[in-house]
Structures are given as structure tokens and as C-alpha cells.
Length: 465
Image (cartoon, rainbow, N blue to C red):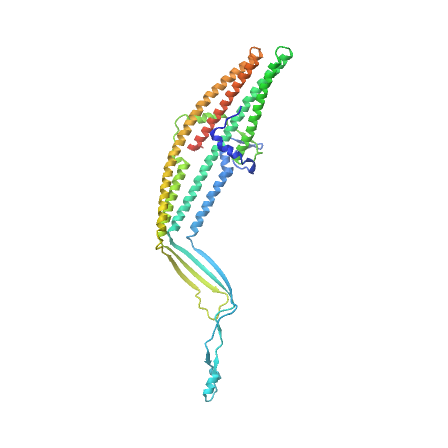
């Protein structure tokens, strides 16, 4: 007997591919007793929200979006820059003002023409720079107006909202996966318990048949048939036990604990089924605005509207101002550089040959698509809820039928064993009744798992904590 895989377990199978490639640490809530982590279903979901790596990665995305907002905000705040430039000139340019009359060279007495001519001397060259110099510029700039900046800042905040809602969606999906793994473990544990009881009964029958055979009261084939039945049960126990170990690793993986950490489940199947029946066999209310997917569609619409405004803002001018102070470590003799400057920049878009208009049209069309997608999302979510509710009710009906069938099969099987011991029933009939019981048991546990997975899906859709 093997349990069939329900639709809700498809994603879990994918996670099994990554089990042995991941290192896991454990922190979170839950009762720890003698090193064993004891968890109810709600505690397991809370634990996973704190330690699951996919959830932690989504939380990092929120922090990243917050830093991105500050990055965009900083663009409109004062900017201060200091630049230092070193310059070496192999040849320093010079300037000379030509000959000049040196009055001190004139004699004290009468001055002749020759004396005047001799008093004229060449003026020394004046360097127009220095061989080595370092220039330090201090610049303070401030954005005064830029339409794209203000729209972009709003868009960055909306992007953070997307990250926040994406975290909520990831948490909801993780809760559903944790619930599915939790339910699977409980079903497998119950399946093992029932099979062990069956095995115990068969062992007792086998021992009795051996003693009867030794006394010549039955045939050896009767003993062999019972032994074959025992082997079948042992094989089933081994198969289901192996599956339970794999499922337990999946459960620990989703929780974010090491595979060596002992975990104990404290909830029971009866309580979980009763809780689901109270909620979903009636007519639960579905509020579309409570759906994370619908909220994400609304945020996406807001973001698309901002993108349209961003393209429209490209027609607006951009104004900024600056102040600059310059110092030189080695001042030349002649220095015409101004140390302090203040100014403003104006960027006015005039003509783009229709490029900006084309981008606006594209943004407007994209907004229309986003709005259509939002309507489609709304209808899809309603359909998903209606389908999930119908699936739950159908799963409960199948579960009820299979539970009754298993109980009847168990009753017939127990009576057949008694009749077999008394020699009234044949070994063939016992084998046939046993197979019928195991089939009924398999159908029961498969329908039980389908019911629990349907509950986990409705819990996610309705965001039940």
C-alpha cells in the first residue's frame, strides 16, 4: 500500500531536490523539551516564518527597498564634493613688458641722449604659473526642482510596498507548505500505527498456526500463506517508514532547523479535521481585498500610474544651484582665478522629435494592461476560492465514505482471522480479505491527506492564522 500524492504536495516534491545541498540553522518559537522541538501546527508555521530562508530573503528585500528609497531621497539633498588636482608644468610660460627706463641709472648732472639710451634696460620675464601646483575645489550643489525626482521618490516607496506584500505572500505560501508537511507526517504516523496493530495480530495468528501445524491440525500451506501476509505488512511498514523519514526532512527543511534536530508534533488529526469542518463545511466568506495577490495588483496599478507621471515629467524643466570655492597650494605671481563662485543651472527640454510623447503613450498603454490584469486577478481569485471550497467539500465526502469503508473492512478482516483460526475460513479467503482491507486503508489515508491539503489551501486563500 502506498499513499497517492495529492495536488497540494506537488511543490513539496520540488523542495526535496534541494534537501541535501542546504545548511540549516535553528531559531524560533516552540517548546523545547530534552532537546526535542515540540510544535503544534500554528507553532510550526510561526517557527518557519522566523527561520525559513525564503522568508528571510524576502525580509532582506524589504530592507533593500528601504535603502533604495534613501538613495533616491539623497539625490535631492545637498551634495558636497571636494576635488584635488595636481599639475606639473615642464615649461612655465613667461611674459615680458619690454625695455623700461631705469631712472637710477641716469647721471646726476646734465643728461644726454646717450645717457637716456643707456638707462633703458630690458624688464625681467614674469612667469605666468608655477612648475608644481595643487588645486583644491570645494563644491556644494542643491537640486531645486526636478519633476522626475519627485515622481521617482514616490515610485521607490511603492516598490517597497511591493516588497512588503511579497513577504506576506511568501509567508502565506510557506505556511501552506508547512501545514501540508505537518499533515503528511501525522497521516503517515497514523498509517504506521494501524499497520503495526495489523502486524501484531498477524504475528499472533502465525504463531498459533505454527503450533497447530506441529500438532497436525492444519496444512503447511496455511502457515505459509499467513507468513506471506506478514511479509507484505512488513514491506509496507518499511516503505511507509522510509517515506516518513523523507517527509520529516522536508518538514525540518521548511522550518529551517537541522535534520538532526528531534521534532515532535503535538496536534492530532481529529482536532485538525474538526477545525476544518467547522470552518469550511458551511459557507465561509471570501473578501477579495484581503487577498495578497489582489493587493499586489492594486500596488502594481499605482506603480504604473507613477510611471506615466514620470514620463510626463520629462517635459518639465530642471533647476539646480551650486557654490564652488577654489584654493591653490602654490599661488603664481599672476592669478586671475576666482576663488568663490555661485551659480544656477537650468535644463529646459524643448524638442525631442516625438520621443517623449511616444514614451508617454507606452506608459499609458502599460497602465491599461495593468488594470486589465487587476480585473483578471480579481476574477481568478474568486474562481480559486470557489474551486478550493468545492474541493474541500468533495474531499470531505470521499473521506467520510472511505473512513466507513475502512472500518467495515477492518471488521470483516478481524472476523476472517478468527474464522481462519477456527478452520472455517481458507487461507485464500484470508489473503483476499486482507488485500481488501489494505486497499480500503490506502484509500482512507489518501482521502484523508486530500482533505487536509484542501484545508491548507483554503487556509492560505482566506489567510487563516
